[in-house]
Image (cartoon, rainbow, N blue to C red):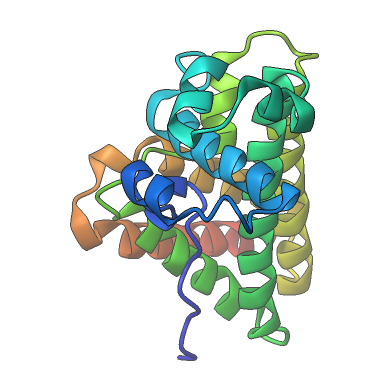
Length: 222
């Protein structure tokens, strides 16, 4: 089996950020650019949003942790909603970047691609600091269907199902739409149920579930 690329830290923004005390000490304010300030604000907010939830984190806390003026935050993110959307959009870029890299390694092997995705997703679920999928977490916090953050989260789910359907079509199974829906439920269910799996269980559980879904799709189509 081809070596699987290591997953990015989507779903674990805190794993790629230095602690706030280190972050504050290492910033050279004399050479810091506007982009640096924006990224520092977004880094800080992403960590806080992921660890505590977006509703529990106010802009005052983000400003204090990022060691910036409130005017700086509002210069780059006019509202808290803009900051939440930026957090989700950056996580989307990382997630789909990893997905595409894995897919490219299995361009002619849809089963291999599907199982490779289950591997890195399973590895992510096994992390001690894993707190779930950011998009699912944020969607759960906003009941308003037209909230901009919820719309970003919902688009993530639409994209996931579309990509899974592309794989199902390449597999040539009957009812690719149904298989894609089942796979999406499997993945999203794993994201919200990670606490039910111990250590290294996640990857084999996901991969075995994929085999079962494929066998069922082929049997029903025959």
